[in-house]
Length: 359
Image (cartoon, rainbow, N blue to C red; front, side, top):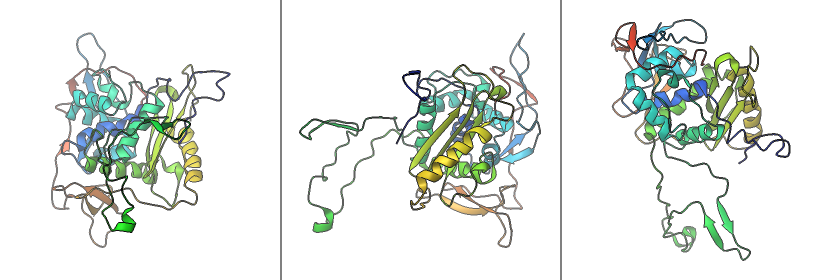
């Protein structure tokens, strides 16, 4: 609908939406989790939230990522890793799926074509633009289909003839009589877009990002009365603050930061600086519009679970949430057990560029 890259092009032609390369921090985490969801994990897979020491090789200091709270939470379901923006869970998940896979998802979603294989990249230590990251979230809500941001959809000459059209799909039945008058089946446009993630994984991630707003780092948005999801991002010394959020039909990206990166202030995080901007904007846009749910793909099943344990909830159990599972996936029963994802030993050797303070 719109893009704002600055106050006034006469003052500065620098477009902060398309040209400012910034670290996304935790706003990148959903793509690490998507890689896991596409490879058999579910929102209730348990990941160990505990101290992690990464050996970077001879002569290099050990890398010790930490959570924003500086606390450890033990075995936690993947949903918590997104909702509460847990660094230790995300780093372990990246080590489990492998940094080459994380690199591939960054490339696939158009976030970063040349991400190095450093483990810290999984916590958003790379760089991207607001436009690129917003488009990547658009691919999630669009069911995993690739979307290229565009400013011009169609160009017509002075006679009304279309000389350029962004959408080049061919609709063989679109020029015929109206289906309502003939009883014919409405024509369908073929979806020729590249698939970047499984549609069921995209829906699972969408529900996890809804939890960011209802229970996690995006709670400042408050009750809206319509479906909304998103993720915060904050980088070291509160230099960059992000929130990328969406409804079923609209994606909005908010970035707060200086042209010459420097701290915004001690309490200026994605939750405090970017979320209120998004909340105010999305309420105005959605005012008077019907509330529609996020589109659930065929085959995805919903179960009532305990949000802390990921176990299937008893019929009379309180404090429950609805969780999405792919065909073949089910929540844990209370009498069952599940392995906790960890890495071998308390110290592991991998490539990790130490950039602390990414939340």
